[in-house]
Image (cartoon, rainbow, N blue to C red; front, side, top):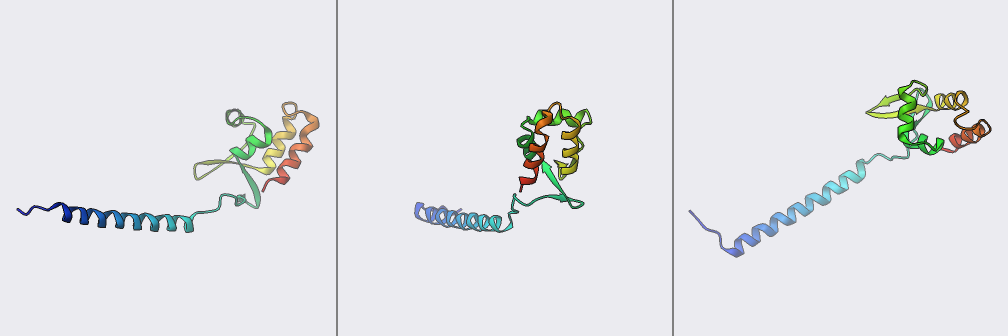
Length: 118
């Protein structure tokens, strides 16, 4: 059996660490190139889709409120890749039919907010 002296061991460890650092840089570079931009507008059948965050900000409600609206069937939704989306037309219909919750005079303001979304 052969034993390693401390200099040989340290040399091997230095090479291993350098190689791991190079691999880490390579992975970071590849991730940066393959990353999809989050600000792309999602469309389904040519219609804009809003996610939970968009709708929470738009309607000024919590995620739990959106879940409740979905559960009772008043807010239609679509699941894509395990993420919940809402069609813009369905959101406008929801606002129009449930306007007492959102103050009838503010419906136009909500519609304007939707048109300003990216």
